[in-house]
Image (tube, rainbow, N blue to C red; front, side, top):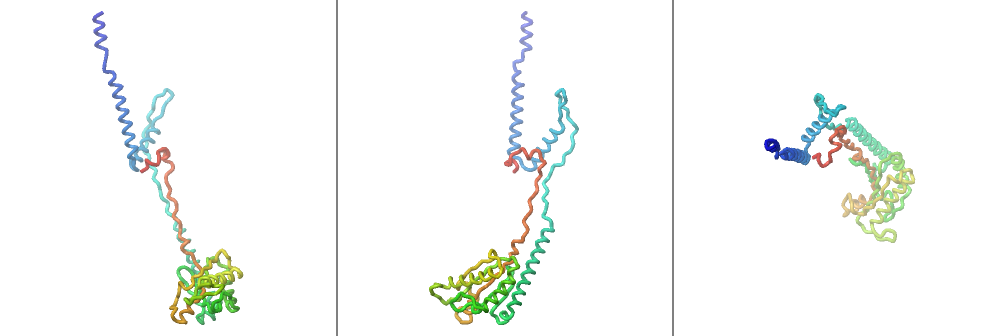
Length: 279
């Protein structure tokens, strides 16, 4: 009996807890390694993790008895985002549209010069083309009496001819009223601001009556704040008393918009990782 007891004491292992402890430490170490990898992931590490997990899940299967079967490893080409540049045709379309707008503005300016030919030759009307459209500058003495905002018969005929040119188009139009620096103080016009604004709105209203869409029109009065000549002389003050019709081309609105950038959507890891890990 004593010999059997000694044999049992010899075979009794008191350090079996070290096996469980070593397994726990190994799992804990693996857990912290994974957490550290996820916390400092970048594009390169993300690709490695993605490829490894995909290969692992695709190459390991389980048979009916519950045993794992490892399939041959196959190479996987990572999916990379491809940015599709905008088709060159869109730029060509914009450029063609810009040239078409420039042609329309040039034709409109030529037509206004034609219908106002006697007035342009005498210097009472000035038609200019610029980067932002066409400007038709009309001397106020042709349109209004001094200190008044009612159009004369000759002015009505000239502006109706201009309206017939503007009506078929779709470009925005701004009618500006300008005066000299001689002050005015009447019951109807306490200052040059009211006089210039009413003159501009009178011309805009005539355009509307002759077929120009009201949604295209803007009337503005600038009084004597935008002179084109020196107000010290009568000739300069006469040039400053004017109504300007601006036909805007709006070619800047024709710039193409950048197309969206494509990103891969078939990545099994990107769909489950939070966005904060994709840094």
